[in-house]
Length: 248
Image (tube, rainbow, N blue to C red):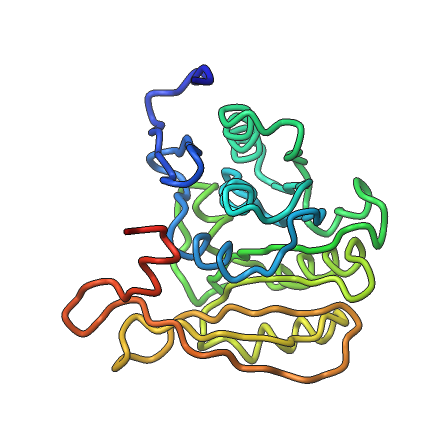
């Protein structure tokens, strides 16, 4: 078994229940949730693709994609130094240094580290909160992960456009009530929404998340997918959600 790197007192070790992967997380910083799992499942990434993750946090998305056999080489961008360092430790913990590279930089600077038009796919779980519309955490990592500035989406999408190959794909998850806003932002950066899937907590509740696939320089044609429902009416997880989590 691979040696566990030094852990701080404010950290925990999680078993991802996938391909033997493990993850170190900060107790009081942003911790991954269902969003990352749903996005890793939704993203149609080929085994030999080169992938960029814009805003990797603790490195969860490259790990989940690797565990699912999606992607070969990963470039994981993270602006916050402490989060980038933790992502690097998680990559080392799982022995994936030869496949996943952590880059401490803003997503909009992606083309300074990668050749333009060199990446097959981009994954992105951008901050959800809007300025003056959500409470901002005192913890800088939580604040950065949950709250966006006025130009956050523009920075992410500009960086994605520059490094994606022609017809390359971007996959993201976002709050369903803001679906129109994020699709307009994608189109403004020549990333055409092509496929989307709404996520419902229960069949009798409004959708709270949307999964979107956008294609660089594509023609506008939008294909809705069947909805994804998380819980049955009795409170149990749906069979599809169990399948996504690899539950028996």
